[in-house]
Amino acid sequence: MFACTYRTPVGEITLAEENGALKRLSFGHLPKLSAGTEVKETPLILKARRQLDEYFAGQRHRFDLPLQPEGTSFQQKVWSALQSIPYGKTASYKDIAVKIGNPRACRAVGMANNKNPLAIVIPCHRVVGSDGKLVGYGGGLGIKEYLLNLELKAGA
Image (cartoon, rainbow, N blue to C red; front, side, top):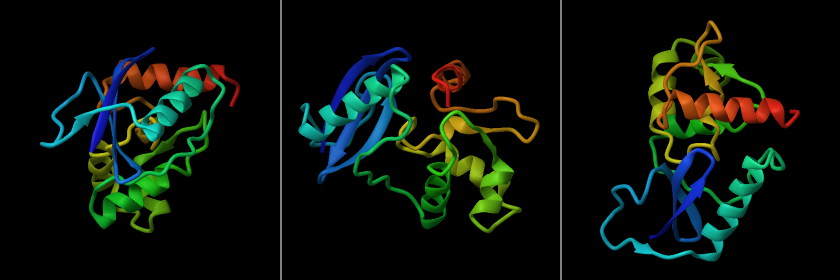
């Protein structure tokens, strides 16, 4: 695995790649990475950085990167559904639960959202409470609010 940390408008972000796919996007400087992880800017990590820079500039609405997040089959369904939330829009945990065919799994959807290893790229920041309020985000509610406002300003 390879990883590299970059400064962004929401603070430091660490990108990690393994076997030609993006595995993690973590807030902060080189979080706990598995043994044997080499700090190196690979072509894929550089491409991900460029796409994040374009996103933060309001020029990119969708990421085009090979992704390989690790998780259960349920988590994978949730993460796939998150990628269908349009740029600049939000969905509730209930909306996602319905989309994956399990309308009573709102709480489980929240837990899967919380375990998303590729924040921003898999847009878990677009998930809000059923009342439309901002709730829970691994990077903190301030970052979630920043990302949603960025998307609204960019003219979704």
